[in-house]
Image 1: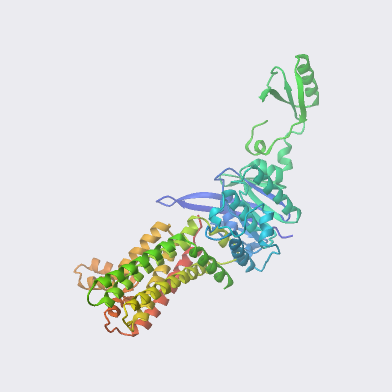
Image 2: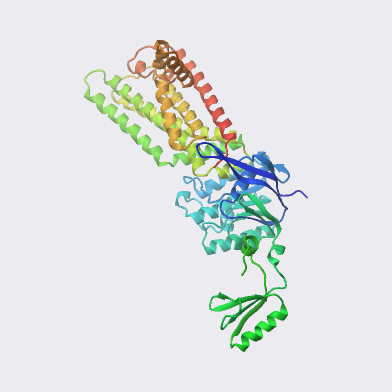
Length: 296
Length: 255
C-alpha cells in the first residue's frame, strides 16, 4: 500500500536578515501518513509545521531530503493532482464571486485529470457556507473564507486533504462543524492531514500524530500509548480540606495516588475528615501533558 | 494550455471589478476632455493640439495601467497569499506567470481600444480628418504598455508591490531617455561613466522606438519599418521578460 504522505529526512534552511544568516526551520524530518487516517501534525507556532506543508504543496523547496505524495515527489506538479489543500488563514481573490472562485479552481484541479461530481452549491453546503454563490469574496468574513477554502479542497474529490490550521478564525460552532466534516470525510475513506497547535482538536480527531518542536520531530505514532500514562495511577477529586499533596481544582481538591489500595485508604481519610468524594477515575494524561510534560 | 486560459480568465474577471482600473480610465477620459477643451481654445492647429494631448493621455494611462496590472497581478497575489491555492494545483509556475500576463494584457488591450476610440471620436467632433498614421501610433502605444506590463510582472515575482512599481517606473523613465543615454555614453570622458551609460542603454528597453506621437499629430512622415521592427522588438522583449519572471518564480520559495 502506497503511503499518502512520506517525509524522508526533510530539511529546510532559510536565509534571514540583511546578511543572509542561515536559519534551520525543519531538521531531517521523517514520517509516513497511511491512507484512510486522520493524521494530526502538531507543534507550537513556529515549530515548522507550515513549512513542511508548503514543501509538500510545492510552494517552497526542501534544502535536504524530500517529501512524497502517493509515492511521487511532491515537487512534480502531477503529484498534487489527488490532493486538496487549505492554506493557513486563506485569502482569495476578493474581486471574484464564490461561484467564479470555485469554477476557476475546479478547472485548475481538472487539469490534473480529476473532476468531482459535486456542484458548487453542494460543496458550499457541505462546508456550512449559507451564502449566495454570486456574492463577491470581498464581502466575506474570515470564517466564511475559511469555509469557502474547505469547499475548494473538495472540488475534485481528492483522496488526500491537507488542512493547515483549519480551525483558526472559526467560532465554536464553526470548529464543531469542521471537526464533524473531517470525521465524515475520513468515514468516506479520505486521508486527512491537518496541522494544529490546539491539542484538543488533535486529541478528539486523530488516529496518529507527528509532533514537532523547533523544527525537530519529537514524536510520531499512535495517540493511545502517548495518552495512557501510568495505567496504575488513580485520580481522586473531592471536596473538603486539603490532604498531603492535593491540588486545588475549582471548588474541589484533586490528588493522584499510585494504586487501588492507596485510593481506598485516601477515600476513607476524606470521609473521616468530613469531605465528600466527587470522582475516582483511572488517571490518563491529556495530549498537552503527554507532549509538553506536567500532570493534571 | 487549459491552466493558462483558466488563470487568464480569472485574472481578467478580477481586474474588470478593480476600482483602480476605473480610476485610471476616469483620469484618461478627463485628460482627453481637457485636450478637447484646450484645442477649442486655440485658433489654429486645433487637431494637432488635440492629438498631441490626447496621445499623451493614452501614453500616460497605458504606462500607469501597465505597471499597475503587472504589479497587482503577481506581487499582490504573493503578498496576499492568494497564490497558494493556485500554485498547489497541478500546474507549473511558468503556466501561472503566462496566464497572469495574458489576463492583464487583455485588460490593457481593451483599455487601449476604448481610449483610442474615444480620441478618434473626439477628433471627429472637430470636423477634421484623421491622420493616416494614427492606427500605427495606437499600436505602438499599446506595445509600449505591454512591455511595461511584462517588466512589472518580472519585478513583482521577487520583490514587493511598492518596489516592483518603483523599479518599473524607473525603467520607463530610462527607456524613454534611451537615445540621450547613448549620446551620453558616446560623449562621456570618463570610461567608468561611459560604461555605466552603455550598460543602462543596453539593459533597458528602448521605448523611444514606440514614440511616433509628435510625428503623427503634426502630420510628419515617419519610417514605416518602425512599425514592423517595433512589433518584433516588443514581442521579443515580452518573451524575454516573461521567461525571466517564470524562471525566477520557479526557484522562489513563496513566503
